[in-house]
Image 1 (tube, one colour):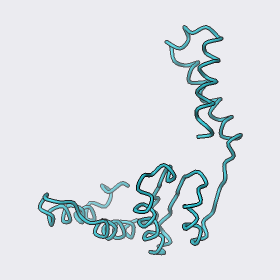
Image 2 (tube, rainbow, N blue to C red; image 1 turned 180 degrees about the vertical axis):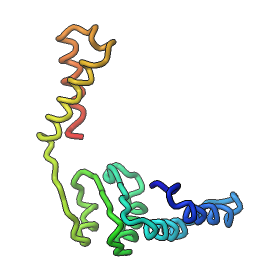
Image 3 (cartoon, rainbow, N blue to C red; image 1 turned 60 degrees about the vertical axis):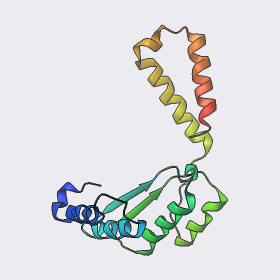
Length: 146
């Protein structure tokens, strides 16, 4: 989030920080309140929650996401990336636009990226072709579409 373009709104964060006298952290509700005010200051705001399925604090993150969605602010756009998990179904009540990427499609991109990267890095060029292909194969296999 680029707060510098709205310097007047940035003082909200400073005020919150000062209110807590640097002794303890603001609550999630206080932070959400500041975020909501900041979102309202922009024509469009994009919030990205990447790899939600990998979060060890899913309940907390899910509650935050539900709060943001509950604002129903048309200028607030939320992008969530995740593997399909049943515990994420709660978010479907908000009628999201869902884009499903199959592992086969993503694996092709990963393979292309890996080959290009290995081809560009000088120290990797010293590998013999067999070793290079073995390493690339393991990387792609371990990526599992991610």
